[in-house]
Structure formats: structure tokens, C-alpha cells
Length: 432
Image 1 (tube, rainbow, N blue to C red):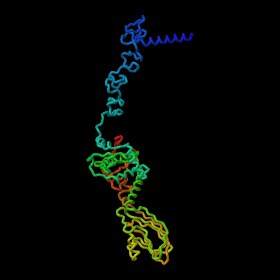
Image 2: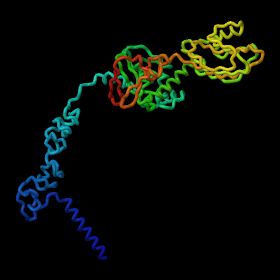
Image 3: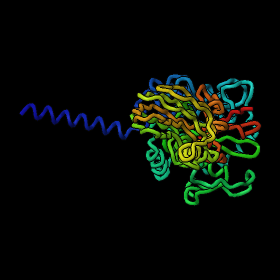
């Protein structure tokens, strides 16, 4: 029973104490001295002679009623009302400023270069950045449909490495899009999606397309401006790997157009009957048609019977040799049982003739390699691949105006100053 009484008394006492604390705003003067008559006894009044103050919460000597920062011992005033105390405010009378990081007398909010004491005014708008802005606005750098489109192109071409992906996208634009002649800025810019749908565009449109496609598969690409064109630029590429990918695709292009592989080996054993004539070479009337610059034949044969050896410029000469014994031959050697060598830079698709003038069948082992050298090497070769160093990384220009045998990094037609701009940061560099 006593425990209950004690608890109840405690509750009553606590309750009374709380009630007293909640209702007391200004303690009554219970007979003590109140010099300034503000209702606070001098013993409780931090300012016994000041009727307007009685508490100094932060102990800085300024009463809470006057102190703009009653809980901050370092601050008492905020003259400009910006929420920063006068002592910490570098501009106590300016509500728009409070910091001056570089101590140049101009507040950080107004200072365009807050960490540089030598300058503070905003520079005038950059004319080149303004020129590039409409093109950058057309770029689409993160789009699921463009990513799928680009992935399809690089996957169908078997392109796995970054350089082969760059080459695949670039070659796709060269081969499948029509580059429309137009002076810079003379026609409205297309979006990448519009260019894909139409399969054509100005060099600006196709460069915007290339830049967007590269970005969507994770390869950074910049825009390159000259006086009369806009190009895309692939960033951070290995130029050796890039040329290998480009060369392989160009050779494939020639093989498709020519109808035959550029490398043709032949190794077998052939029975050659008496008076038989064996021809190893190109078909009759097969011309290089501008696709092939020349052909090289590496040959080796062995025979158990002596043979007559001829080099003929075309299969037509073989037919003449076979049918009437006359032919326009490039070289001739009789009675050979073996021979090996190289016929270099044949300008026609001819070959080698072996004639068996014996009365017995000859068994002939032949090992030949015909190598066709495409004409594109005259113009498009590794020596013509130009790279630019940006941030310590190699970058190459992608010119959408080139023909079917163009490759990434060929910029022989790009003349004059080149300004290269990062479409994300808007930073740019200039190359001669």
C-alpha cells in the first residue's frame, strides 16, 4: 500500500511541476529585487538594468530579444537580412552576397570566376559554341531505338572490338545513305531518326547520325566543324586496329564487286596427258575493271616429265596456244621438271601454262597462290589514316561524303582549320 502512495505522490508532484513549467512565461516577482521592472528578479535577469532584455542564451553579451542569432556566440547581427551574420558575411550590407572566395571584392554569386582573383566578369558568348549549338541539339545520345539500330549493324558485320564497331557504323552510312550536296546551314537539320527513315541527308545530317549512333553503343564521338562542312569524330581509338578492320571491309567490298576472292591458293596433283596443256589463271575476258590494280602469282611445280612453261596475260592466249600453237606469251621456258618463283604486278588476269610435249602422261604437283591487289590502296591506305590527339587519346574524323571505299580516319579532302567540340561539355579544341 505504501508503494502506491509514494507513486501517486510522485505523479502528483511531477504533474504539478510540469504544469508550473508550461504556464509560466514570466516568473512572478516573489518579493525579490527587480531593478528595471521587467518582471524578472535581478538574480534571474541577465540584464537587471535593461527593461528590454533578461536572457542571453549564447552568452555573447547581447540579449536574446536583440540578438539575431541568440544561439550563436559568434554572431549578433544580420544587417542585410540574408541569413548570414555580419561577422561571417563578407558583404554585410548586401543581401545577395556573403562569400568572396578569391578575395577580389566581388561576391561569389556575381563572380563568374569565383576562384580567380584576376577576373570576375562573364565572358561574352562564344561565337563557335553558338554556331555548334543547333547541331548539338539534334544529337540523340541515349535512345533505346538508336541503340538497337546500331547494335544490329555492328552485330551483323561481326564487329566486336570498338574499332571494328566504329568502322561498321561508318561503312553502313557510306554504303546505305545518300549524301546530299548542300552548303553549310542551307537546309533544316534532320534528327538521326529522320535520316534513318529517309536514308539520306546532308553531311551535317549524316555526321549527327554517326555521332548519335556511336554514343548509343558507348563510344564517345565529337563534332568537327570546318568552314564548309560538319563531320563526326570517334574518340579513343587504336589506329592500327582501326585500319585492320577498315582494310578487311574494303577488301570484302572489292571481292563482292569483282566476284572472286583477292587471295586464291591452289595446291594439288594433276595428271597431264601427252600433248596436254594445263592453264592455271583467270577466266577468259575477265578484266580487272578498275577494281584490281595488279596481280601477283607465287608458283611452284614439280613434274616427272619435262614440261614447257609459259606465262600468258589472259586465258585467251592459252586458248590460242592450245588450238593453233600461237600465243602472245609474257615469258617461256622449255623442258622444266620443276620451277618456282613469283610473277609480280601482272596488269591482266592471266596465268601460267604448262605444256606436256612428251609421249607419256606427266604427273604434276602444283602449288600456286594468286594475290589480287585492289586499286583502292592507291588512294585509301594506312598511310592516309590521320589521327588527332585529344586528351591524350587518338581520335579520327568520319567523313560521310566519301565514296564506297572510304574508311574512318581518311581526311585528305578536309581542308583548313578544324574545330572539334565535345557535345556534352561544350569544350572544344582547334586543329590546323
